[in-house]
Length: 71
Image (cartoon, rainbow, N blue to C red; front, side, top):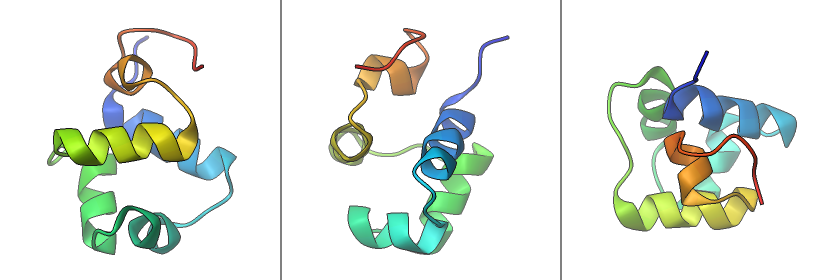
């Protein structure tokens, strides 16, 4: 079963053992934004998607569910 962006983001965050607040600070967004992304209620802008990709060292394709493995 394919997971959505929010589930992938939550999984990456938990693997790195960081909370929503810490990730929000790293990405310069509010904690509520991280929560909304993880719940699938909104999606990041392209610039934030790039920042997430760089922070977790995964491809944008992986975050979008277009590939199964990260870089």
